[in-house]
Image 1 (cartoon, rainbow, N blue to C red):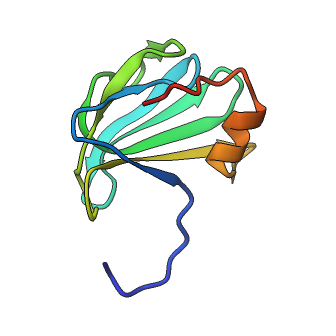
Image 2 (image 1 turned 60 degrees about the horizontal axis):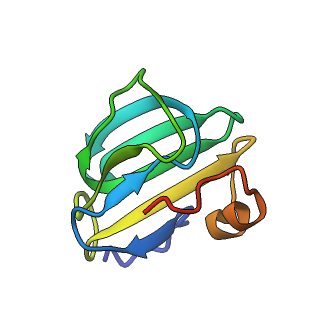
Length: 116
């Protein structure tokens, strides 16, 4: 879109707008915000200390400071922010380092694999 090369730390899943997004694990919502790039987004610190970000939501169903449980509906997928179509962009950081989301959830069974 921008003709710039920039790192992409997340994994994108094409979805219809309005698909339910479920929390990966128990945790606390640190951010429930909007910006022009990420659109409606959530940042969650999970019980194991890892951080997840859920971007481009059409709706956010949780607020900053709220405790959430594994599998809880936290929002709906959308097309907000800078996107080329409706999808969920999800990022996972372990010890402050972005990891390959799909590889991580496939090896760590404590995470909810049914996030959308």
